[in-house]
Length: 237
Image (tube, rainbow, N blue to C red; front, side, top):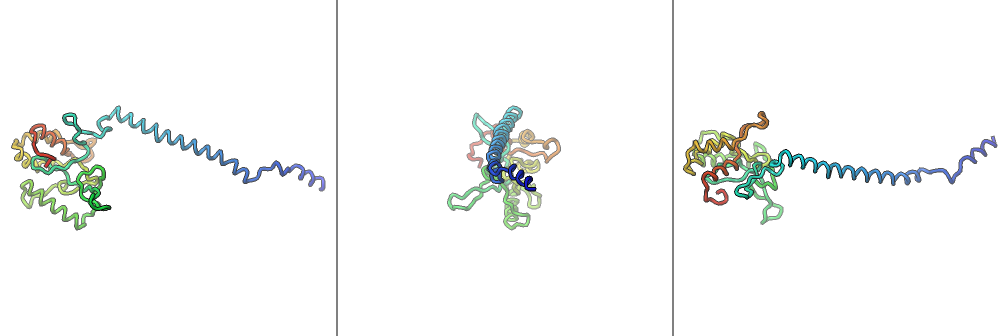
């Protein structure tokens, strides 16, 4: 028994044993190195390689859409086919209402209405029973009927009096465009048949032939009107 105890004590040398704190300390450099390498790999793949690949593919296959679907006239960018603009003059087709806002320069922390503000898109988030929304829609209905010479009992297209979720919708329904057509024809002294041709050219079909409804791009239609008959009005008023 004595001999066994001596042998055991001799085989275990305190100077050569690795304690748990020493093992943990030795593992930290390896763990740090692995973390740094993983972070660099993710950064290169997701932050550099993937964006370059998708940008290259988009520019090669869909250059117009990849660059914002911008519309140019006489070498000047006048807008995007994806973002609506505000038109109020009788000689133009009017787009869908916009509920976008912008910071009030005269009052810190406050906002004011800024239709088609692409830098701050969004809806009003007001529900169907909200008092302010009900009043706003009623005012838009009355103004739409007055602008287009409609009887008080005629239905108004819903897209003519409500904003879209983004507030930047560049389209209106065919029904909306047709109701505005007589007003625009009278303001420009053009035959309605000519405006129908322009409206048909600015009409986009259902997405993939299935989604949504045919719709009219207001900016493209109004630009076609100005190309046919330039107007002297400023700022689309």
